[in-house]
Length: 255
Image (cartoon, rainbow, N blue to C red; front, side, top):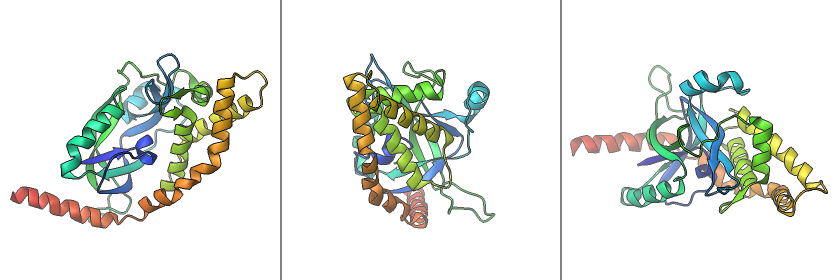
């Protein structure tokens, strides 16, 4: 079983896995349009986390009002789960992603894996947790980047400050896919940092919002503490993974 992570699963890995590699899925757009009432917010003050919007849906329903390009690649990390751990990890992730997410399957690509004609071909087929626009916690783009940034800057849930989530994801993407800048993430990062700076320097801010601003701004240099871990993902031998998957499929056919 393979699992593809494009949000907190990139930098907060709390489950056992055998191997992993950086890669991307096609046909989806990553957006901070899903509400979070159980991790980065509360029912009274929901935070925002990422989900994947099918590209066809984004083009038909959101393209005209979304200032950022849909893109052709959404980068993240794919994880191979050992057979004897599949049930355990699936149950854990189902609970972790219970607030509106459901499982879809998608091909995961890597730039180095191509067919004989030089065209990209999938490395693996993986489970992906997506929150559709029909789930009750879906917030969508209605508020706009500035308003979304303000919401992220001041909300907090059982898993921590919402701004930590955004900034950790932005830092991870700079490490894993610097050649594919995500305009949506970068615009939100700028908006959130501006709001935090305003809150931190405002005499009118509440103690809670000031705590958020001071803590996150103080923590920003510490995001680099995970660089070695992220860098190790980039050193993975993807060709070896392709070979192992081919051998696994052959064994399955024989059996």
